[in-house]
Amino acid sequence: MSRQSQAAVERAIAARRERVNDAIPEELPVDEPERLYEATRYLLDAGGKRLRPTVLLLVAESLADADVDPETADYRSFPAEGGTVDVLKAAVGVEVIQSFTLIHDDIMDDDDLRRGVPSVHREYDLSTAILAGDTLFSKAFEYLVETGAAPERTNAALMELSTTCTQICEGQSLDIDFESRDAVATDEYLEMVELKTAVLYAASAAIPAMLVGADDETVDSLHGYGLDVGRAFQIQDDLLDLTTPSEKLGKQRGSDLVEGKQTLITLHAREQGVDVDDLVETDSVEAVDEAEIEAAVERLREAGSIQYARETARDLIASGKDNLQVLPDNEARARLEDIADYLIEREY
Image (cartoon, rainbow, N blue to C red; front, side):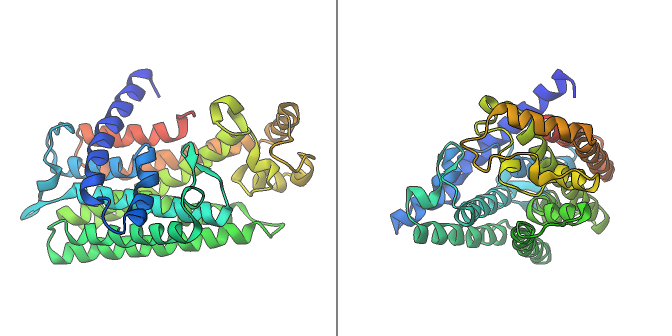
C-alpha cells in the first residue's frame, strides 16, 4: 500500500469517525439510571477507530454514486430507492454492537484493560457491565428500526443483525472450546474467526445496501467483502502479536503464544510437526523475556507459519476486493478497497 493510499484511507476513516463520534451522544445520551448509561458510553467514549461504521457509510456513499463530503453529508437523510434513510443511525448501531461484544469479552476473559482504560467490569462492577452490554445490544436494534427505511428493507437489516449477533456468540463459544483442545484444524480456526470477528464486518457492508434498496446480488457480494476482510483483520492481529515490538504493541509481544491461544500461525506450525507447547517455557506473560519470544518466532518463521498466515490474509483481501466490483467505480469504492489493504498492513 502506497503512502498516498494509506494517507487517503486514514483521512477517510478519521472524517467518518468524527461523524459517528458526534452521533453517539445523540443516540445514546446518559439518561436515568445514570450509572447504567455511563457504563454503556464508557468504552465508546474511550475511543476506537470506528472501522465498521466507516465501512457502512462508505458502502452507502458508493451506492449513491455521487461525490460525498463526509464532513457535510446529510447521513441522516441519505438517498435510497424511493426515498431517504438515516444511515448514521445504522452506523452507530454496528459500533454499539462492537462495544457490546468487547464488554462481554472482557468479562469472560477477566481482562483488566481495554483501549488503555480499565475494562467496564473493573471501572464499575460485574453486574453493571453485563447490563451495559445488554443495553447496547438492544439499542442497536432500536436504531435500525428508526432509520426510516421501507418496512421490508428494515426487516432484512434486522434479520442480518440478529443473525450476526447469534454467529458472534457461536464464534466466541468455539474460541472457548479451542482452549481445551489439543488438535484444531486450520479450517476450524478460520470458521471460528469468521463467526467471532468477520460477520460484523459483513453486516456493516451488507446492511446499508439493504436499507437503500440494493438488489440481492449486491447485498451478497458486499457481505462477502466483509467476511473476507474481517478474517484477514483477525489474522493480521495474530501476526502483530508476534512481530510487533512490545513498546509499539502496548502489551507484551507474544502474549498469545505464552497464554497458549490457538492462532492460524500456531495451528499451521503444529501441522508442520512443531511442538508449539514447548516454544515458550515461561507460562507468565509478565515473566517472559524478548529473547525467548524471538526464538519462538524464529522457529515459526522456519516452519513457514508466519509466511502462511501472511499469504492467507493477502488472499482473503484480494477476494474481498473482488467482491466490490458490484459497486459503481467511484471514490467511496476506492476507499473500501484501500481499507481492505489497510487492515492487513496496519501497525500498532
